[in-house]
Image (cartoon, rainbow, N blue to C red; front, side):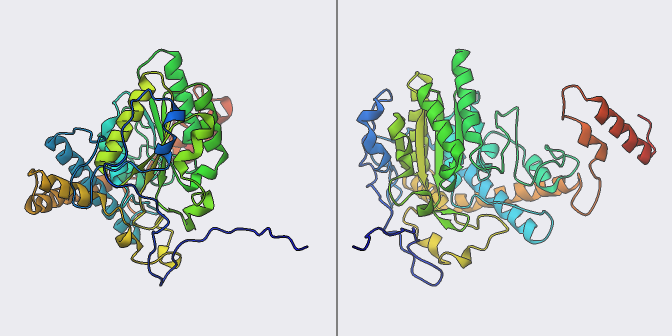
Length: 414
């Protein structure tokens, strides 16, 4: 008798030249999902991992119990930060295309996640971002000049030329170093959160990975430790539908929502509209309060769409329809927040255009300042002797000798 078993290979719903198809995406109506108490046991709220928390409807009207109660001024500031992030991204992407930096990764279409969550967390909370979370750095006050200088590897480079572009950090802002090795930030965040609990602090940790990174072992290690020790941590999965050129189904998104990955360990999962800043903010507030009150971790899946290429090394037209972002049912996060502010009488098209132009000028000015510290082709340049700094607490004799040899070659006395 012939076997009926077959190897299943997940395939995207549309390829280049085909009509975009998001029929696979399970959506809830805006306002339809109830907001439970923060201390509700995970076993009582498993539905949150499969439904979707949404606040803004298609007309930009806020609906339901998850409305975060942000003031018009706070919403305007969120919109400003999202526009600044988008203008920064656009500038840096174009600079790479002109050969002025070597590499870049945009967050186009995902700005509401970083800005919404950054606003919902406290300054003392430790953030472990991924490489598409530049909005977190901007929201926490990192200077654009410093972000640009890191991409230029110039004399103001925070990483002193030791990291590839977009691998930022900000110690003063409690932003951990971005890692190109996927999912490493998850165990780091859980460990930091455990230490915070041991010390009796009120601070929590938060970490971000993409849908593809949920296949990494570090993701599962982190969930186990977070569940066992009730770590005060928020673990975010940014499901932007594509992991480089691999559809999210390859990481298991076909079977169950990524938010459901922690249910077997007793970690509550919440699926949220990642293009709705109000929903993102509200869900983050809920998870943060849960963590601070000793109720442990939360796994949040942000359903969004990567509007641009994976990186400047990628050509998405080779694996997905060219107009797929325009067809994404959750829309553009910037346009949605803009429409909401117009609806409540605190914004206009003219104000929006003026604000966008203002952010563009800020980015242009920052770029002019950044290149004054050096570019890939023009000085000034980093001192090569700095390669020996910040490696060991106490520099070993072998490196001292090597540094002396280098300085001798340069004709400099140590």
